[in-house]
Image (cartoon, rainbow, N blue to C red; front, side, top):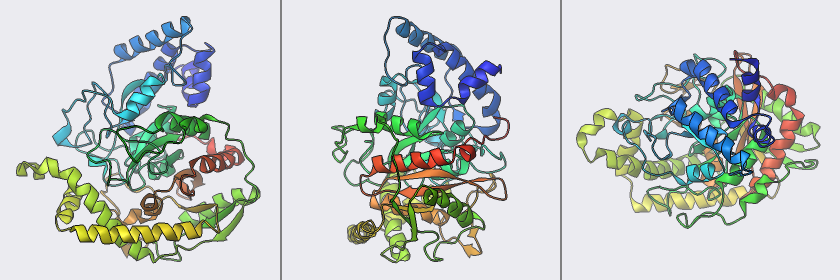
Length: 481
């Protein structure tokens, strides 16, 4: 790759957009640089899959250049290469869900998120890899294989937006989309030294989906290397839509505004390991507490915080909700019983567990969830933001399915080691993973900030202030990038 091409791939999305619109670079040059970076790094990391033919992409880039020559721009993503997570539809591309049962399914139309990004000018170059059905925070599947951590190819990238996180860290993408049910935007961001935001529930409507009334735990959202890019992509993804009756009506243009703010006086509650309840591998708390010092330096106050409800009660309610929502997603694939042999054990476990659930159990779990939400509201009377590690373990060996043991404690489910991420999800709160730094093992870790209900804008501004205070640490790049 030439130096000029490497310079292009180092740019964040907004800087790249500015360079395109001022004609410092052409859309063709951007596409050539992106494809060269993918050719160089993706064979090892396996972040981008179902890649579109280069000639088709270059023709699209030329068409974007022709538009600019006529004084026409589609939007801020005009001519910028994007890869969409392989759980979402892009017309003409495979949506495999990481499942061998879906490996040949080609979407006939764009999903809502892809529609909005394309309308802003994005050129879709392929998909980003995800675990089978998006289950488990470790991106591997039988269709494409495993995605490897940007900082150490022997380690997991996290998930389920693992392909997106690695593609960002390795400068194959300037900004990326993902989705989050159980930390899937936050965990791979933390493990690849980028930002990943789970917006407030309803902020980014999803379509097509099976259900729009009950399934309110998963959401799509943005990832990026720079907070301005994260906020700008959110402004594109967000906005009410008739297909999603619970989507928020606030004008998404607010997220395209200036992120500059003075965080002095903001009160941050440090949840840590929940007074020893959450097992954590060594060094994680220390790295996250060091990151918290940045907020102290900005004039924020940091105090210990405690959930107002026993964590085990929250977990039990979570299990019911998780199984009730995941079981029906797997059910259509089991109409043919022979398909069981082609579905991973973790997905079958979710389905099998869901079969025994009753309506009364779900309503009881919903009541527990309501109590938890009310307890969070009480906590936010004392704090503006809550902080907690984004993961309980460091990126683990890529050959493992999931950690069986954390800090000497056996994990009783395939996702118990991810328990730290459920609190923002269950309460429908916005949460962003900011890079916290690196452990003695040289691996990245993230710090999750949790905002007040529908407090996405305030959370974005606080994360931006953190970014401005840590530019040196954030500028570190993975080996060979």
